[in-house]
Image (cartoon, rainbow, N blue to C red; front, side, top):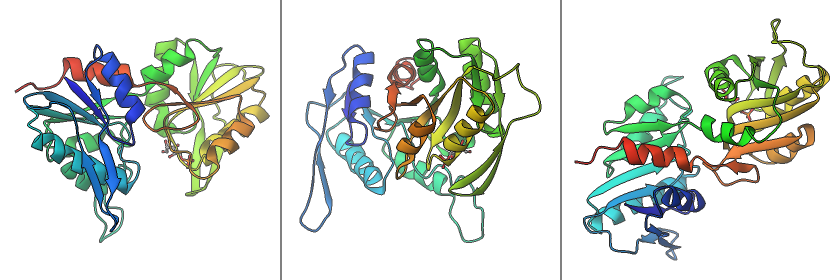
Length: 292
Ligand code: R5P
């Protein structure tokens, strides 16, 4: 198996290649033509090979690069192409909220799978998006990666910043054998949220080491308000952990100012990238992919 890392996921792709027993790893050549159009070229002998392409689609340019790389890998004669999209952009628009809108997640599924034999992604905004692929599609979870990291850290209680994250925090709590609870969250607008401590708690928060667990940190508003609330209610230390760390604008600094640690996985490159999903992606590539 060959692993190719697009510019959005070079480090993670290299980690995946190591997890696959040091599979041959390549970084494509990319440049822009004078008119702004993108150019890519893959190297190595890919004819008849099974190729894994890793590229998060955080920006439109990342998506375009993915499309061009898929075509280049097919042109190079790959036998199978497995496309890994660690952070799948546009996944939040997973339904039509108002007349005239697209189901962007579905539209992206169609494009991403076009040249692929299978698609692997990590913690989609909604699991239902996986059903929009017509090719075999798999979802790795960022929870085991964060749990591996937290095993080495002091943790008393895990906290989801909202009820939507109950399954996530419950699974993390099972892996770490720790208690958990979820805050009550009301979103005011895309930058502001209101949070409350629930009536039922697994014991006192006084002096406890609390870890907030979320799928994505975007503006950081949720984590900032959650950390402040937990500290006000007596927490001894508060850390923030997520799978996808987008950290828009000064989100990372704002969260850091009100927490003891900030952790994210490596689905996106950022300053909090301390846990790797490479073993979890490699596990799917080794065990679950269709081979014919
Ligand atoms: C919401 O459903 C998600 O799980 C996150 O809590 C949310 O997207 C985080 O956004 P922000 O960092 O902008 O508060």
